[in-house]
Length: 436
Image 1 (cartoon, one colour):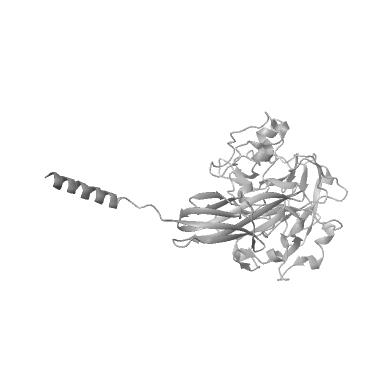
Image 2 (tube, rainbow, N blue to C red):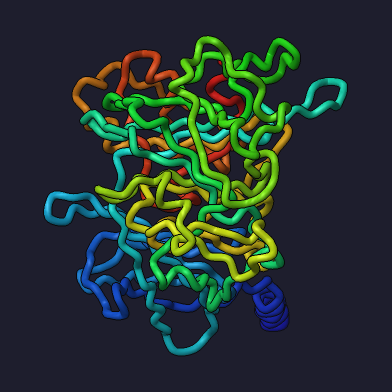
């Protein structure tokens, strides 16, 4: 009888074990860093594998290889890091899609792009407006903040503000895309749409270390007087205002506040169409640039050889070719995280990645803090404010945990992330900083 009971117990245990749900099959995979199609031995670089629901990280070994053991599936591998080369700081970015299946351990190479880090960066963009309790939306109060992300003064007098292709929908794009890379990537230029804005000749624009200038894209006035949920832009440093061109739509360009000198009204040359500079709400792609020495930006944009228009009958498809070496910083926004529906508008040397932007709720796209670089500044001791809670969500927040605006108010000097990767450099902020 005891034998029968024991046998039944064993059989029951076997059935119980065999009925336990199996976990997902896993597979080893190697990710190799490459540059110009050759492997590079860069140790200690963080590589991330993500599939939309889970994310895995590993460091590269002495051969520049990161090894993972992950469930089978489709992943995106991404790399973003900085390195000093001959005294200059460079950003290295790369990404690759891969399918992980059970079998021999695959090796996936990620080809990195190299770009020089800039002193001037886009710190914040507010372009989606807000909606009041009555359901009315107001979106004519856009602004952008340019920041000196270094410890030395910057002369920004020759800086220009431009926009890449104004939508990220493939239907509007006239350039071939191969394996996710747009054709002008290999040609070394970035398109500027409709117009480029610059500071008036003779206007000195010096930005002190760890300081900023605010530029009103629309309406350098106090918008809160007519729309309380809006922004007071009557005291910004500069504004886009050149109604002597075709960009003279009154709603977009009311007479600027008297607080802003006329010499601080930025000028433009319109090579596209319309009565206002098209500035997308959910798919903005602004960038800042400084031309090489000896080149006058206002002259450059007027010359036909610097323009690219495959359809002369439509100026809407006319772009000015901006050499990638002139571009200081860029931001790519999409309405949704859907790489099957949207495309990357910048060459990889200018920017990789994107941020998803939600409009009408008063959100701004705000730069993440470089925690290590900021904490390394001796003067910041006791001035940094932590437990940042200003992001739209905990999942998409500033990973540093530093409240940049509160820290600046306390006298701290903030170094922001600058990897030329919009995915890792920015997050959505619940309240635009100029609303405070």
